[in-house]
Length: 140
Image (tube, rainbow, N blue to C red; front, side):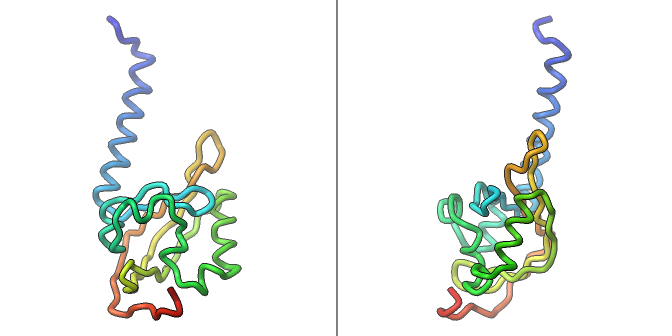
């Protein structure tokens, strides 16, 4: 009687979508970025895999997970331009944990769009593989 069915259906849809994202976050090593590569949110699985606390990554640039040479490369800069323009990216990427250990990520980076405008990006790596190699101090 107090709830209009037309209003409650969109609310139910939003609640369902939130539940889906929360379930994915609990099951996968997800990380969300703005269009410039700044970490907006990271799942506990991602944080555990990379050896960071949430406060150490949110608000920081994605490059903290990369070697210096990669982070300063033209290819890396193009990657973020492509994401910002709405082009999804996929591949196998070597990233580095807080302790310097290598993590090989096979995953998809895809734009998050709202009203047709790219507002961020999400990485959904179905595969994270820790390696025993550590980056040298010159690559940090």
